Amino acid sequence: MNVPLDFLHKMCSYEVEIHGVKVKAHLADWAILVDTHIYEIYKFIFRGKSLVALDVKTVTNVAQLVILGAGTEFLIIQLHSLDSYPLLLDDLFSQAIVCFVGVRISDILSYSINIKVKIIKICVLIQEHGLKKLAQAAGITLKQSTFSGTKTPPWSVRLFSAEQIRLAIHDAYTAYVIGSKLLEQI
Image (cartoon, rainbow, N blue to C red; front, side, top):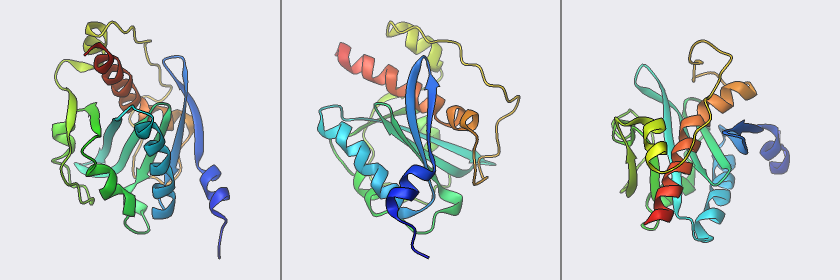
């Protein structure tokens, strides 16, 4: 069965609000969709913002989701159900001009991720200070995030609610905003 790529592209797309900003998120478990959304991230990179958010969601220290984003476009790669290896993923990770920003990036690199991560240039490393404290240092006021769920969703599921999508990309988007602000100050 051949499903048109345009339909697949729209099928798992969400628009959620984080810190008062509408952010688009795309859930992908097909390599061709991952590659299509990486092209969207490249559009931001080639416009001069070479900053990309990176996060990993795990279940018992095994990566289930890889989250990548730039600007207000985010991609959630479902590693646990990926049909094949996305060709552009290696390309993105090997770009010398890209600076990756995220929470606990040093931990992310130690997870069992079934991705061939080459050299990652990390410009902003948000470690023990936490997002809120670093945001204050950068002159950013973060709105308190509220989630209706009381516990972290099981990241190994195939379908997510908009609320779970917001939870999945929250830290990556927040790190992106902080990293972007810090790079502007340099």
